[in-house]
Length: 425
Image (cartoon, rainbow, N blue to C red; front, side, top):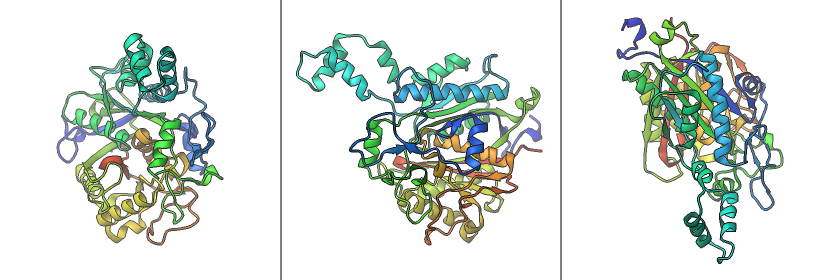
């Protein structure tokens, strides 16, 4: 392999040749980018299920999706198929079979209320309760329902639809999952196992049960009156994240393979870094060490110094603790220079897309590089004096951006960071 196709450590350079994205802002890169850079919010009142008595009544649902049933698995599958198709179309692979594996960040799926009611009705003569579910599972076949709630089902559907190679990989690292899917693709390419990989993530988990669980963790905002103003990353009056849905897919290839087939190169995955800890099931370690380590490892892997980072796409959830931890971690790595680096949170407009977040934000980061426009952090009207960052407040900013750090910090101390760059010379 020629030196022009390898990085500073002699590994194949990994590039992106196709991208797809879908959020509450719309379907596809064009609609999402126009809304994101215009400071439009996709957060709205929930209409999918009854909200009476709930503390949080807003979300970023993708109600425009045509699904066979309104459930997390069905919505997640529909979004994943759409974004993978968009990415493969752009890369020039759709319809011709994909020459590499699939790495899919899968949402947690389970029996939802409507599924449980169906099962219980099959054993109506029994006393209501868990025994009904067990009896129904034992006495009847439920092939469609069984397939619906298996973790690997969405990945198998994607692999079958788009003819990816090998066993599709389903993975889950909480809110870092989308970034982890990209990391897995990068590492497979660097090891020489393949010359192309499809990395995708999808999460349609805005259900009544999901909302209640996050509410019980005191993680969600309850500022329901004006939904579009509820997500306020890095603001003093931030009060929790907004649960949302979304999906993204990226086609990764070695630079040599992409150029040999004449593909358009959209950007480079320059570095990946991950670090997990066992501090708490949901909370991040307050000293920020795992996040600090993930950031440092991504920069080291990319072979770049902190002064080469032109923009940071923050995890920026709008929770009091996470935003404070992210600022502390960045200041530890960048020093006082962090106050001059533009940093914004896509979640101020799209909410927290959970499993999909790292992949969605990787797509937006690459579009920032390509378009020379940094999306704003909206709803930033009450700055937190303890987090004195340049958050690109409320209005987009034109800028030359060559290198981006994108952070994903998940529940359970699962952290993954990506360093993304422009097309190599």
